[in-house]
Structure formats: C-alpha cells, structure tokens
Amino acid sequence: MIRMYLGRKEHNPPHFHAYYQDSKGVFDISKCELTEGNLPRRQVKLIEAWAELHKEELLADWRLAQNGEIPFKIDPLK
Image 1 (tube, rainbow, N blue to C red):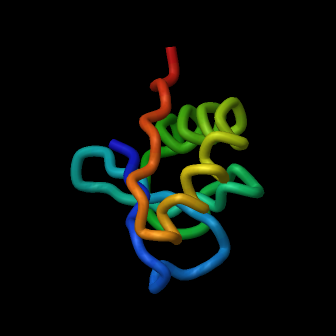
Image 2 (image 1 turned 120 degrees about the horizontal axis):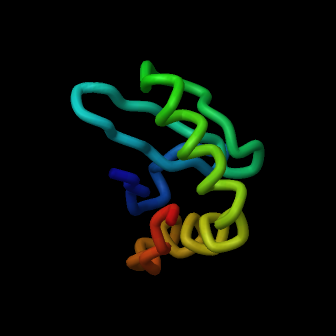
C-alpha cells in the first residue's frame, strides 16, 4: 500500500510511505529510492520501478497534498 499524507506539516523532501505486511518505508520521490524503513528487497525494487514510472504524477500529487487537497490515484505497477 502506498500513502501520501496531507498538509503543510508533512516534511520535505517530497516523499511517500509504503507498507507491506509488517514492514514500512519512506521513498524520496525525486530520487525514486528508499530513504527510511525496512521493506523486503523485492518490494523495494518494485516500488522504486513504480515510482520511476510515475514520478511526475507523484510530484503533482505531493503539491496537492501540501495544499491540503486530495491527491489523484495513480495506477499500480502492472
């Protein structure tokens, strides 16, 4: 599951949170890489690939979220 939290208090750099079973991680959108967390390696690679494909959408959603607006849904990795 991928989540982006709303509000100006959410810190920079632009990022999103990923959850898989009992693991979680934070991914930098600009770098498309895991910056915090303990996700399994396979899931990290899949999420990084997905983030690279949807980088512009993620950055647009980050701007919306910073303004307290609901971000658009982004298609999952297929």
